[in-house]
Length: 195
Length: 365
Image 1 (cartoon, each protein chain N blue to C red):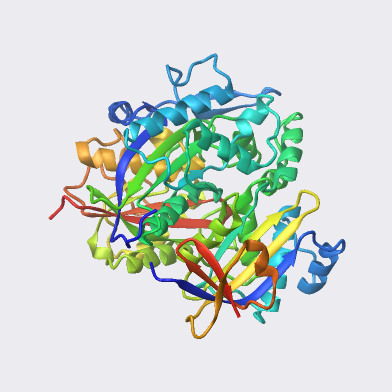
Image 2 (cartoon, each protein chain N blue to C red):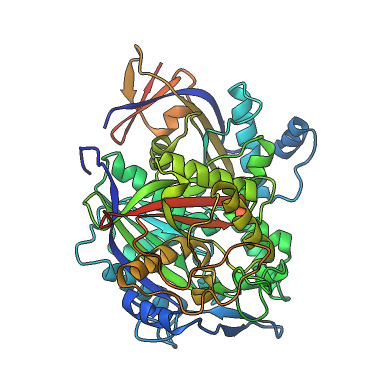
């Protein structure tokens, strides 16, 4: 398998997110996002910031959107299960407990319609490797989001590129936050970063 | 791991437990008998819903705990895939409800959702990487596309896709609250269709790069942000066109379409309208929802197993074509079409998910 090489055009690492992240998101969107749960909202906060860092207003339709989460919307799930003690969960609470509901929210607010999925592994690099294998012509937007304290919203925007003259070194997921690296490659299953 | 790039992905093994029974052969026998009647599932507060559970039996003992039953069913369907399933391959667990039935039964919340996914892998003595796909009804199809990417990259020779939608009240209650459930039975494409009936399934597909009868050609997946709970005919047309183009297939080459068609008044109409946009004349159609209910995240795997097994044996769901809504200009075929070489397989659902797969029968010449 040839090495797949990607330019890191945008990145956003919030672990934890700032205390006023919801206000920041509302300011950025011009309104508070409606009818979405807090987990999806935290995903949207990071994804929007990541696209902004890439200088993109919208996510192109040929980009894969891959969302990972170890916990998923389990705060909403706990609330919905509580509501079942009194009958059936409220529709909005039930919807917010479904991981898949983050995808249309992201689609709506990122001006995107394309290949999106919720896919999680314990090792975040595996999810990134798989996203690179399945990315479309416009690359990918990949996120790792958990609302359980302290909270995480980490996003990468990658576009396909050629290896060029980049010097690569073996890397870990945490090193992706370092803005010194702007090229990412997978050599088999080994992550490498370059400048 | 494997070093060379594979030139195809094939279905090497299948295992299924659903309302039709445990084991693919048993499911086929019961499929031929006609639509099953859903059971009534009662929750507290005098609420009840129709539901298609896996029948009680040796692998789903009536007194077993939710977790013991889940473990027995998972082990059974993976064992049915064959003795040579590699435990070092990637495992994709596709589910909407995951362990919520266990939580209802009083189990403690695991440290995180992935912990339960890893517990399922441990039931199978799995050593390979474990992925959890939670894209609602399209979960199994998305898992298959991801498995295909790993196999055809040459990184792995095999992968196992495990669709799991196990019994719980929560999902039925949620769908009921949204007024999406039929009061009694599902009636796909029928003029009197009035909603879904949910079902239980555990379905395993063992995929690999060794040529076999059924080749997974590829597919496409699209998320629509305009309707988070339903299908859109324009997106249906787009995803089907994209899948056909990705596989180098023309609409005229499609010999059979496995529909999503779950009995929803609006979604059935949107799906058929989308297909009319792609196909000047619709190919033969089939849906399995009247027979096993909508098994959500497991539906892609469960229905693909049933479809391929039906085509191998000439079995077909009984009474599937009894009535059809004339407004749709679409009706399921009453018998399997003769040797459909290339088949389109649709799954639509929650989260604005629209997915389809193209499979090919390599025995057709």
